[in-house]
Length: 249
Image (cartoon, rainbow, N blue to C red; front, side):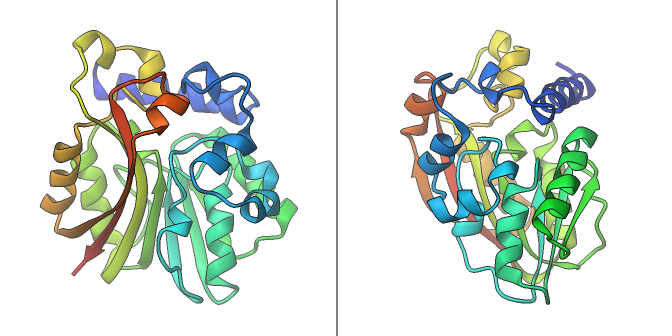
């Protein structure tokens, strides 16, 4: 499937999620599992979930804000910020002296996130409509990049990591969780719109994914791997959630 068609599929699906549709229509999660249960299963605490409950859409495959130390005063960039959940958790760590920028390709998600920012009174968080393959962010302006199960959706992953490298300051860090494959998919699976929106069809084999990050210039460290997520949310598909720290030297 062509890159622009893939992006259209993703925009259409997540605009519906922003409007209130369940992610279970394509994320393969059990219909009887609510957003809070999903978030607990991928590493969020009760305190984190309850602090910004309306921003939690039950999306993701990890907790990037909990992987590494986000320091007070830092500037954080969230790739695929959705309704703002991870942005608000990061803002709690940066404090008023810091700033968090969320980027999302779906205007409807950006609009929902802005409403949530106002509701929860987060004045140090900004949401921008944009493509993570072409970030609307200045060079060398970011201390920490986070992302939660979003880069797998991007058709041009080398471009994403090139952009991340561009916007990060020297010594900047990336904390991300993402879906990677343990077995290659068929062409029919790759072209399946449900699997595209559900974070499966666009995923890469684990070693290929890691190579793209190192080729972009990052020093990569695998923090953990969650193979059980396949049974919990993906009906036993041959995949896992990988948690990574990457540093720009």
